[in-house]
Image 1 (cartoon, rainbow, N blue to C red):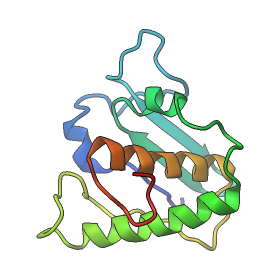
Image 2: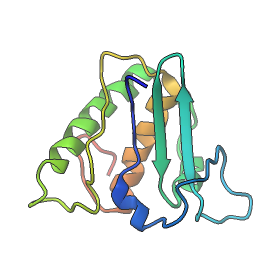
Image 3: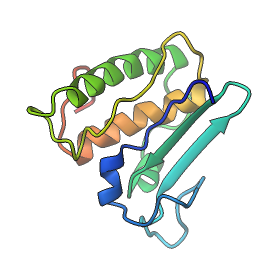
Image 4: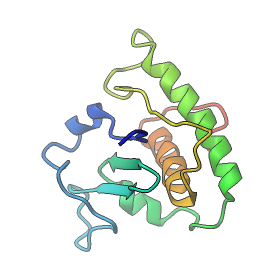
Length: 140
């Protein structure tokens, strides 16, 4: 694929050992968070988003539903969050490589659609809450 929107921060594998091969589109019915992986792909647009993060699916259920925020607002927040996240990846002396493993390729000129922007935005909110990180413009 030409353009990847890949959110699979390798450092999170430490927190979810052995769970990267399972794709889940809804929260586990048994309440477990071990196999908490979300994958969304659209071959016609050639993008993919993968979130491997224990607890993300169950947390997402408690957030404002799809449609609450407009796509333009989500895109604006995502541009801001991705820029700050990528900046932190490039500063390993200031920010942990365990949290900021690799850059996120988010091209603001591509229309990824509502679903990808919704999940990416919520992932950043979750990331900030779970790891006590503060991004400019974040909800914390």
